[in-house]
Length: 254
Image (tube, rainbow, N blue to C red; front, top):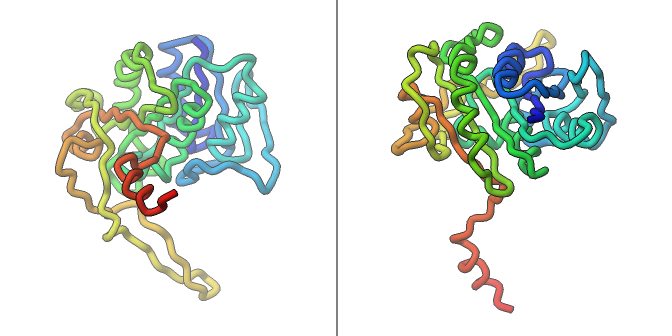
């Protein structure tokens, strides 16, 4: 089984080391192509206004000067001798829960794989404490990764679908188990915005990542993580709201 690994935290990210260790429990045919630098929040963006540079770090290990989508595209069109059987994206440093999946470069890389008809899974490690960006504990992902992935290898994925996995901010022995849940939704009305002044006296604004309140009233990925479970969520790329089609069609009689 050929596996392509990628992420949005960059080729040198510790989460990619964790992901490679997980992947090597599943196969020896591992390829890596990731952004050269962190691309968190890049979403499903594609670099179109400048060339993308490709760098070889080692055998079957490459980086690109672009987005996670660029990395997957380059791997599929240029690097791999044949399409992979599986694409794994992550392990992201931080949560990709609820509607945050629309911003996530980690999830976007898996989306690109799904568009190419390849079984694709995004993995993220939630962490609780602020100021831990370089010291995020990946214990839950490292110990539970194989156990989460193996059952998914035998599940048929519908066309243009992917799976989003989030590990709770706990040590491996404290994880309650695995839940298959739907995507939740945050309350963005209270999202944080940090304001400041730079050394030259100009104002700047920084979007905060914390303090966004949510009230998961049902079995969503948000609730699963809050309860100490690993959240496994199937996602689809078809964003059409089917229930609205007939009502809108009625507004445009032929």
